[in-house]
Length: 202
Image (cartoon, rainbow, N blue to C red; front, top):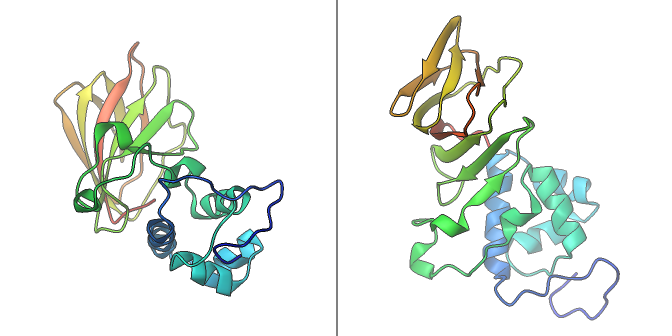
């Protein structure tokens, strides 16, 4: 629906003075490109036309909360990804992430919270602050076509890389290069890791 349209229904359109439609569209486009999805795929998943999605990415369409939720689901991010607590100064866009404005990414694993430290996911790598709750574990090893490095800030973390178990303590770091890995926090406190992945997986 074009900007300025009057029609409203139960899926109210976003009424947020801090929401920049152009910036929102650019963010959707970055995510779509990072996921290697076409306009047609997003349109099909959201039930909207290709023309609408194209206009949305250019900041020329107004989107409802329900539609934005579908877009977020299709792109694999939470709805809150598109809402910031405060509008960033233009000079900070793509350069700075304030501590209170990190975007959280969902995980299929209970007990893991990942906050994006990178300004966006459009670069050659992405950096996260990953917090593993006590007792949390990745039960089955995962294998990704990536190079990953991590630095344990606090807590204790067991990391299986290939066939080897490494018991990590604060200050330890690790690298995973296209090997199966899994992890477990057997401690009584959160394990906090700065995690870098290339190319981006989110």
